[in-house]
Length: 342
Ligand code: UD1
Image 1 (cartoon, rainbow, N blue to C red):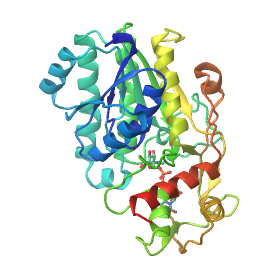
Image 2: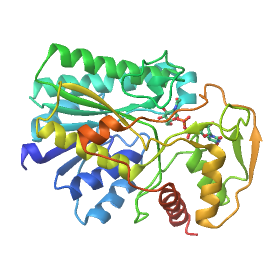
Image 3: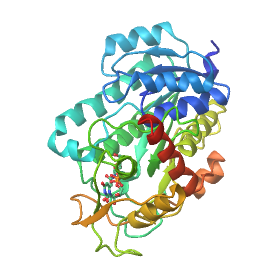
Image 4: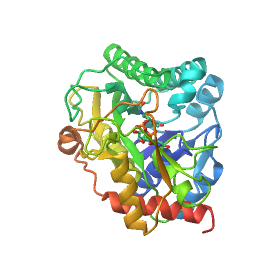
């Protein structure tokens, strides 16, 4: 294995990790997938293997397990890591904060310690637009001040960013990029991988596709009294394949030593905001079906609207979202249909 062309993907069996693994391999990287399968399924790795037509090196390891991580770092040669492995359910984090602080902070600390110990230089980190809270001015740029987190999950993302910032300041050999994702949706065009939530989906698009598939009776739209185009909340929905390609661009930037400073942050979104109702209508139109939905009060902790300014990612990473919302919503439905044999 060529150390500089090999990437360790922590959380590689997850939704974004699996799509990113595909894009990395197709861009010529070798990938080592690491996942403890606590919130992912081994079938995602099989799906990736089918798409890329080769077997992957897979480690079932918890990033918090320092001994197991140390052994793996000893055994394998790689110079870049993408760290996806984290819990991400906002509501659950409110009820079980210690689960989130333990896992999301400790796993990053172990990764950084192992990087130092084994001379691994490059880290791409999964951050989130949640760090902006409800911004006063839209779209948000990377300079938009962060606001106090509204959930323990959001707080772990802010703290993770700070841990990387401080470590990178103390150790110039660490080269890191945090990508602040907006709302990832959709699936691979093969329908071999996609979003696979356990239990009742908390996020909008899986709830939509499961409602269309008849698994859920009615989609509940949380709030129609926001100050937006139609009263429903606005988000920047980014195709998961486009998001995956942003990771490849970030890994390339690190490998080619193109960074301006050794810790950089990029927004990864489309630059367009869409309301929940707009998304529902687009889903119905492109897939030629009708969804049962009802309006209910706002969901606690939700913000009204957010979308990204993406100029920095466009210019510095040379990356731009390419898929239309229609293509993305079609891929989400194709994935759900394949999953349910419809
Ligand atoms: C949240 C987090 C984000 C995190 C993501 C992953 C915040 C501000 N955002 O995104 O950082 O990465 O979860 O889990 O913390 N909706 C409905 N009905 C539903 C489900 C959702 O109307 O059944 C609405 C929501 O109220 C929201 C929009 O759809 O307005 C998107 O919701 P969701 O997909 O859950 O993502 P966020 O809450 O934006």
